[in-house]
Image 1 (cartoon, one colour):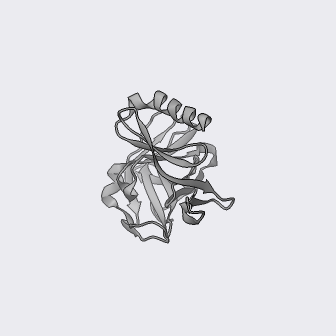
Image 2 (cartoon, one colour):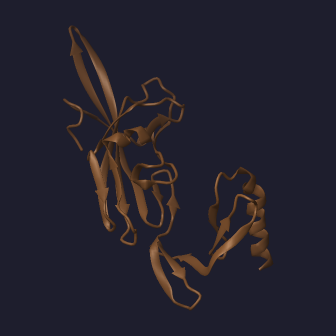
Image 3 (cartoon, helix red, strand yellow):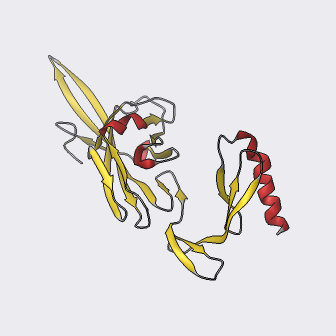
Length: 220
């Protein structure tokens, strides 16, 4: 108990001064704690939480019963998962299109991100996205160069609990041959898919598939 109390106190000491709002954290023994702006904290409940080997998240109740509450949270360069929403970067493809202008040939490129978005059956509400959400999407390389987002497909997405959708996000351009960029990343800002925090997914340049197309958008 002393170790847990000390751990919670340390979290408060390190982070309370930078809080813009109350935040929830888990202690080492899996209990929910609410960290308040005023530097105090309280246990949210007497329940504890645990992750199973298959990646499920369960609530261990004080009456010795348990319930499934979703997936175990996960954050990696290609996947971000909360208990209900799972966003996975399946692949990134660079489409190259050559345009002939008089006697000259100009090469144009577009970068396409393929995402698998899955909403767990325990989710209480649908999540959505549409073409207007391109304002909530950013694409950049690790050198800070930005690439304008052109489209999201399908143009209207409405995911019900227990469903999934393949989503493609298209941006203009790609790091040039002489660029020293080593990776490119996609940032989904709060709002799209009802995200409360930004989600950042990235792929290394040398792991990106490159294809030539007669017209952009011919492959999905």
